[in-house]
Length: 382
Image (tube, rainbow, N blue to C red; front, side, top):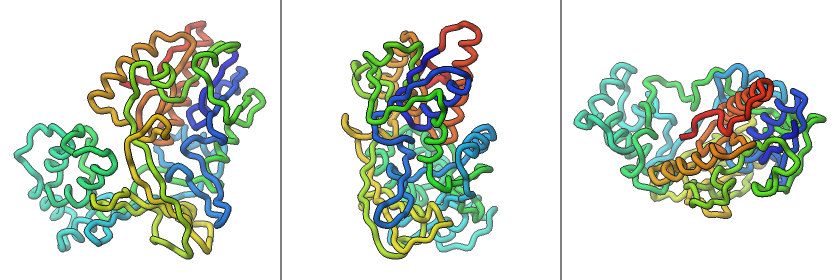
């Protein structure tokens, strides 16, 4: 069969590779002038620092198939991501852990004492949290919430935490030990030569033809192909005919400096009065390298306009209603599959993106072998 893939990020690249290795012909169209989507990494010309052009991406997973897959296409170097946050003129560890608690309250609590202390602070009068703020207050009480979550959340989502669903804070984001690793996954690493090299190696196959700076036209792009794999925005496939799904986008204030600017890869800023949410110092994402200068991004979140890059799906009530209408349209399409974070309107970490792309390709190949139509979705995006 002949496939055309819209988008050359991880989703499109992985699906294309799996189909090509099974003997199918694949043509890829990418609207940007580079591979790897928002995971694009490139050397800064002035400093030689490997920069995450669209913000930091840290690879972490417990999925052995995904871990073996990325190691097949690039060298992964162990990397434990650690984040700090500045609040009220002081620096704390993130995620909130035992040291963070002791710093904030000026205590020297042991784990069991800290757990009891936070339980005492928690608002036990809230039985069924109706929103993000109530969920946080029920979990941790007002001091921890206001210091580390309220301001940051307002900036990140552009909304009062009372207007956000409680499900965003699905579990207690506190550790009662001194573990300051941001992730708990078994495999945590960075690609030695960046994500762009990995994606380039994935699509380096005689059965794959790649066209950069060449967006796939949903209206005329299917001519001459048996099936389309669409990894762009779900609503864009339909020309936004029902309206635009809501996203947050990011602005980056980029600058270089001598030496070491902040001493860590990521510094969050929890105070609402500070307009940006975090600063990323990119040379710290490759600690095995040595650089005399440094590249820093200040990151600010705002509403996504028609010409902006969509980063975070909002998925509030209005967006979910609109999503359900687009899903109904999508399920009525023939010869099209929607894959990836944009194609399914969900925020996905890289390992989940790769894992879902592998499973989507499995599903396509199984349908072909059985002589069945290839379905539009391989996960339930609703």
